[in-house]
Length: 262
Ligand SMILES: [Zn+2]
Ligand SMILES: [Zn+2]
Image (cartoon, rainbow, N blue to C red; front, top):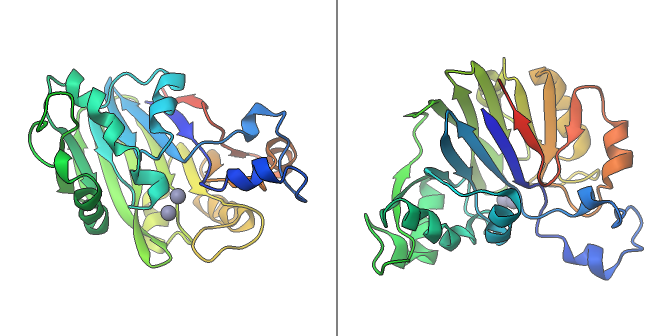
């Protein structure tokens, strides 16, 4: 299994640029502090699964060499996760101008239909347009290379899909829990035994709809995976000092980070 972190940030990048002297703001000379909207690309036995596509998706694909998507999963319908979906048009072209299988929860599906009504169907309405064959994400989705389990994470008034990737051939388990204020019991259970876990950890200060760093570290220790990465970080998280302060086996993710799980 290969995992590429296309983005590890939030939509709060502009204050960092406008107010670089803000207390706690990160060091702009460190490339690991240049974060685009959170998104991850998982490859299982050559099968490419894209999770979320925010406004940075197109440039993320170019800078990370992403040239194939076989399946798309939208964790939830917030702008920083959904607004780049139109840019999957090229991946529909590459499939012989056919629709891309898209999975989400009911709220995600409703929003996809509102924002991209021209893209719903089995093939593009115009050659070169995107096309999405939209289905509700089941609890267990068998796909080439393994299976993807899903669970529900709380995120303010919204439900978010928590995803567990199981690569049969590699015998590896990868967990991606972004955008959540907590990790409920069922999600903790599903994460146990994972090789790598990714958790939402917005910033140091508590937030009503996201876990903050201290909370995410608590959850990481409870799950007990050998390696946990924190993602969906704001401009208040300065990579090097914060990363150095984390317990062993827990690190900050950064844009372009690649994992090879074999
Ligand atoms: Zn969100
Ligand atoms: Zn988000």
